[in-house]
Image 1 (cartoon, rainbow, N blue to C red):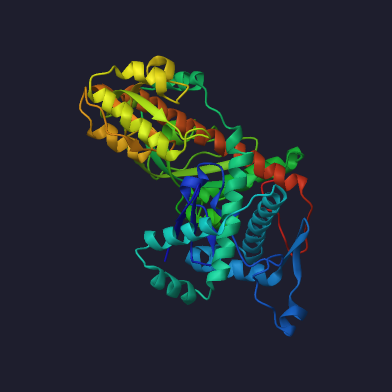
Image 2: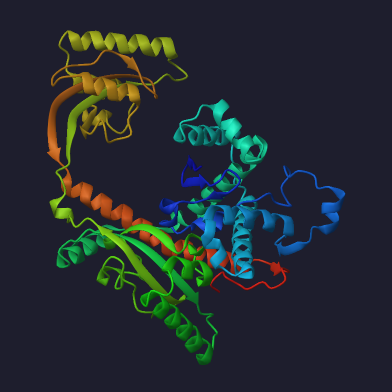
Length: 473
């Protein structure tokens, strides 16, 4: 069963005791595997251990001022095995445990950073998240509570996990998304390059294998890593091994536990690593081994869909309304009742034929528009962030009509619609789509750098026997 939580970043729980980010969040640079959650030794909601468990439970990693216990790691590995099915059996046990431990470490580091930054999550935000999970799985709260219990989890434990995931999401927005900016020049450059590429807009279903190279690795180590991946590629090409199984067993990438599955990626928005490789592959084809600053890569394209250019996208027509308004705000001199009465008197003068612009200049408390006779220009009621009451009034008025006095968010308002039109906004929509996706692409790169820096700057002491680093460093 799959449960989804949609917040600032989409979150997923699979099963309930395991929280991960789906492809939408991965595209922002925050991989699924880094969000693995389990009951933490530094969380207050963890169930008390029995005396025997306290005796046997060992510390497998010290992370900052907290620890990860062997019982936590065992629980997380068990959930991964249940989720991955037979694919997990393709991975040597120590590699699987090492990958899961690295994921737990990264999640713990992010939670600790969020706590240091004072990131807070309200009970209302958690309640909203739980309701969304239930709604997206077509459950009422009673059914959802039973489903949580069936996964051997209490609602308090679920709330604690959702709180931590939301803390991490807020932290990422503060420390990563806030640094991502896409200029008009970026959009222009992309559109120009896209035109030269015949504006092909395709999506690729990709699987990926990463074998990282440490920045200080010597030539012999680099060549040995390349040779190992070349040998694995040959097994895949010869049909002696399945790409997904090889990825699960050998890849150190974020999607290794999913058989390297990166989901659908739009061809025009591929990251720098894949941009020159993926579009050259046919469905089912495996790339040659290639390298970037992270290490050696191998990709396989499972499927391709779509070939429409942005130039051939359906027209986007938006309705715009040219309008003026008079806004009256209660203040220390004029209370709410007097403000409403003044608005009523102004409305009567408008009905008697007084000029709207003149009255707006005389009475409106909107300093941004009063000198222009209350002119708001051309407004898109369905696109702009308008007060819902204001939007309904605009939608109901014909050109030349004046609204009744109504109470909006900032006070009492009167509107006049002077004209309506439909405008072709296809080009603007295309540019906004490009801007949004370029932002996601930059976020992937910024997110990877942020996670590496977070790990490099932190105190981490791994004590797990047979541990093999899988963090790509």
